[in-house]
Length: 361
Image (cartoon, rainbow, N blue to C red; front, side, top):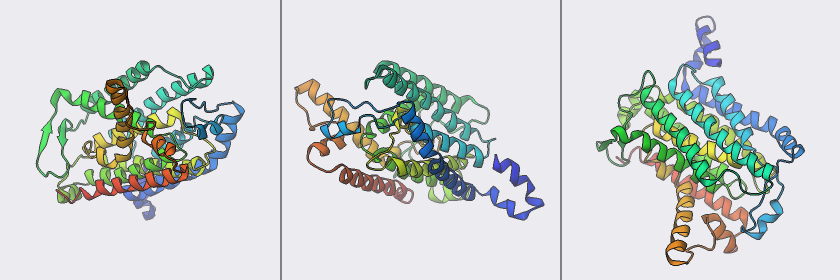
């Protein structure tokens, strides 16, 4: 909105020419989202408390978590408010990629909201059934994938798959593109959801992943830089860097209240929408396989659950004390704060690894 209001005035006030630069608007989006979270955070927490929107703790979880019973949840609404408001303020709203990622994030947020609402109204830690949640996620992801291919101005190279570390090796997915898109979004959404089990853990990792993809989308949308680094150039996708920057700012602002001991939890309305947002950005920038590295912490958490369930069903034995992975270390005696910080360090390592692949080709 600010871009459309102020950039046309550049001939009258030359200072407004800065609005043409994605880097300037990305910085503005980061600060706006951060300030919105810090300003509205206390009001949001008070409102959630007044409405008795408290977290239900699973009885099978670590005993130390029972003290968190009743902590306000659905704080993801604050993240979405700051993220979407900041994006709409600073982004070029004629850009199709901006609306794609905003729409997909909002759709998964609605699914997460429904799940959280059912948990609260039923007064138990069970919301949507696994089948219902998966079906809704698949439908939302399928519509988003169809939009990428079908809306006016679609990228002719949208269906190609680029492999990190290889300069020229690409794979055309053709009709398999939409199912692949669905797999990435649903997988990433649920991986972030599984990671959201300790105070600040998921939002801290989100801050790192969003910051990393802010760089990657900017590179993909800049013809000169993309050609120099030999990554796919996607015309217009650089504008998505503003969305990523806004997500980083919203993550940092929410972390102020979600850090240990947490005053509020994000709930599924936050984790599902954040995961979908990161997955969508990765696919739009043609860096979807790099998501395995950049989101390495989320991948480890998801794989730990898969390994635990598979092992128990096949052998009757558990490979971890408890899944997801962070619970394993809790039961091993690690303090919650130590797990969180060490996992953040892992997330930062994976983010830097992802950025390093830009030159390792």
